[in-house]
Length: 184
Image 1 (cartoon, helix red, strand yellow):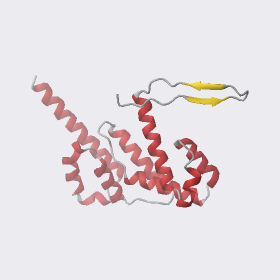
Image 2: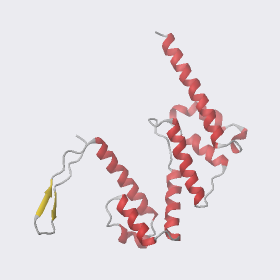
Image 3: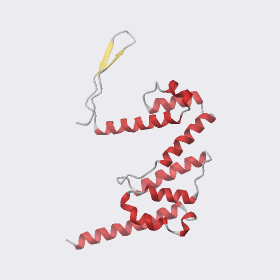
Image 4: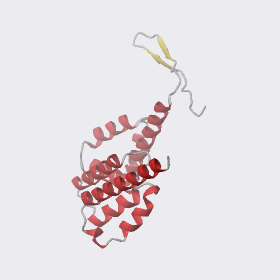
């Protein structure tokens, strides 16, 4: 298969005896969680200034790395700058997988933009709307082309754009349902 088998881990107990942990097979979910953790750890390391990389490279998972960063920087300007940089990267790389629900995609993008605003990084209405359109899965391309050329895209609220796309989604769903039921 495609999954790796982790090596047995031996630890020394307080009384000097050894304990060996032999992990079971790795599930697809565990493999997926590991990939997400590796990505998060990489993003955290990329957001750090070069002079701190050696210090933080010892942390092997994102959770302990982030805890160490918070401990060292203690919420000062440096940690805020790292968080802001990380959020900017997440925003720039944001896209919707075709398997994700439309509502979930909208909520995630809205949350990222809200977090950026907390750090004083405001996204213009037009940029946010264009980001939303560019991030939609490819099966939306026909609708995206139409909406990108609308004149009021720079003043239309993100919620209004989302609601318009929900209507389009319902219409497309209705057409698909009626055409598949009429062909039977």
